[in-house]
Amino acid sequence: MIATHGQFQAAKLWQRLDYARQHLTPVQTDLRIMFEDPLHPDEPAKQVVPSPNWLAAALHGNILPSIDAYLKMPLKHRYERNGVVVERQVLGANAAMLRWRMQEEGWQFTREDVMPGHILHTADVMPPMTLKEAMEYLLQKDVPSHVWSGGARSNKKMFVFCKADQLPGRAFRNAWEIIQ
Amino acid sequence: MSTLRINTLENASGGDGVAQAEIYGGAVRTWCDVDQTGTQAIRDDVNVSSITDAGVGKTTVTYTNAHTNGNYAVSGASSDDGTAAALMGLNGTSTAKLAGSYVGIVWNTSGAASDRTVFGFTAMGYLA
Image (tube, rainbow over all chains, first blue to last red; front, side, top):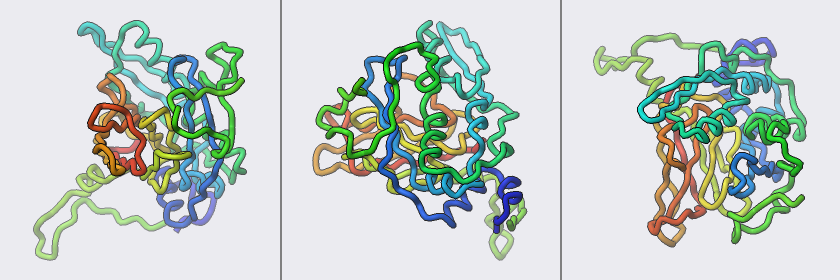
C-alpha cells in the first residue's frame, strides 16, 4: 500500500498510476483547451479533453511527475529520404517542431525511441494541483510547445481555455477556429 | 507496497510455464473508451492523460507514461451508430507511431471520416 510521499516518490510512474486507478474516484470536467497549430494552418482548431482518471491523479497529488519529465524527455527520431536514413536526438518539447521541419525538407518520419536517462519515474512528484493548475500542466504536456510558448511567432491567439458548452455543434467541425 | 518477484509462472503440475517477461510484454498498457460525438468525452481509460479532438472522426490519444518507442501494437473498434459500418486506423501517411501518443481516425465504408459514439482503443507494448 502506498501511503507516504516517500513511497510515492520511490514508485515508478506506472505503479503510481495503478494506485490512482484503484484508489481515486475519476473526476469529469467540462473544461477544455482549444488550440490551433501554426505549423498546420489548414487544420481546424483542436480540442483537448482531460482524462477523468488523469485529472483525479493531478488533483490528488504525488502521482504525476514534474512537467520537466515530459518537456525534457530525451527522444531519438529516425527519418528516411530516398533510401538515406538519418537519426536526430531531440527533447520532448521540441519533437513536434523537428518532425515538421524534417517533413518540410522531404524526410519521412519512421521511428521514435525514448532514450535512456528519461526521468518519468524519478522526477519529483507533483503536489496536489488545483483544477486550473492541472489544465495548465496538461497544456504544456499534451499541446505542442510551439503553440503555447510563442515559438511560432504569431500575433494570433493560438490557445484558449473554455467550457464544453461554449463550443459549437459538430455540423461544421472541420471549420472550427478560435475567435480572435 | 508489496511486490511478488518471479521469473516463471507454472500450473500445479509444473507444466504450462510462462515467463513473467512474456506476461509483461503482452499486457495492455494503455486503453480508452471515447465518445467522439457531442462535446467529446473519455468514459474510462488507463494511462491516458487526454484525448485531442482534431476534427471529424480524428482523435489523438496521449499517454501519461510513454511507451519505450513507437513500435507497439494498437487495436481499435468503433460503433456503427446505425449508419455505415466504421473502420479505424492510424491517421496520416507516416508509417511511424509516436511513443507518447497515437492519432486514430474513424472512416465509414464510403471512406469519409466519421464521429462515433464508441471509439475504443488499446495499445500493447513496453512502457518507458
